[in-house]
Length: 124
Image 1 (cartoon, rainbow, N blue to C red):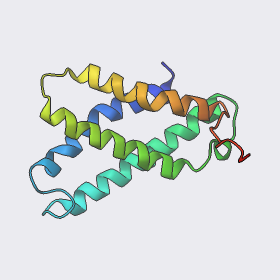
Image 2: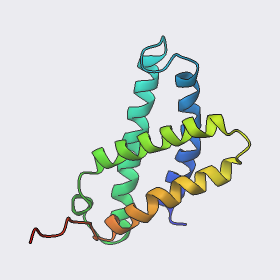
Image 3: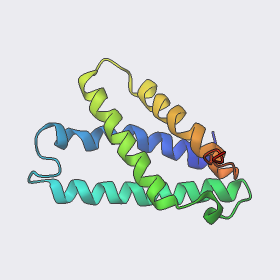
């Protein structure tokens, strides 16, 4: 697995830790809201950087991938949501859940970093 993809995989595993304060009622509105927001932003910046690195490894300018910042926030949000599901299904092994997240995300991001983007069909 390429370095950026492997790091995204490991970061997906870390998303479960972000979900813990949310599930305890201390998420966005609780006493740890500022710290959770800071961590989300930090993860999103790292993911945006990794997407840019993955694009560069494919010989593309990161700008050609599109706006990596909103894509990174989307992935962090998806990982956090999956972590919420996982919290309710604790018997699922860490590696399996991380693999699901990577298969969900990297399939699409893999196309983007190779310069392949989905566009809606032309109106006819």
